[in-house]
Length: 69
Image (cartoon, rainbow, N blue to C red; front, top):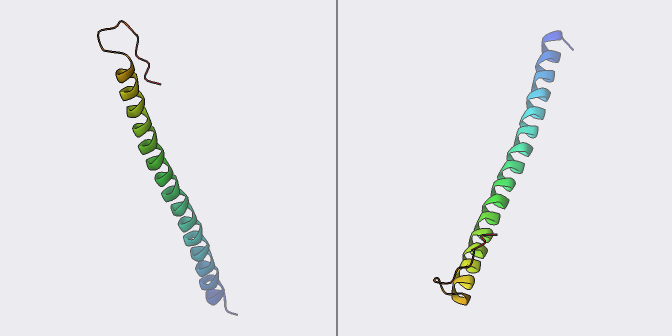
C-alpha cells in the first residue's frame, strides 16, 4: 500500500467517525429539545390549572397570598 493511499484511507475513516459522532450528538440534542418542549407545555398547563382552581376556590377580594408553585 502506498503512503498516499493509506493517508486517504485513514482520512476517510476519521471523517466517517466524526460524522457518526456528530449525528449521535445531533440526535441527543434533538431529543433533549423535544423533552424540554414537552416539559414546558406540561408545566404551563398544570400551572394555569392550579391558578384557575385557586381563584375559583378563593374569591379575589380575600387577603390570601397566591403561591405560584
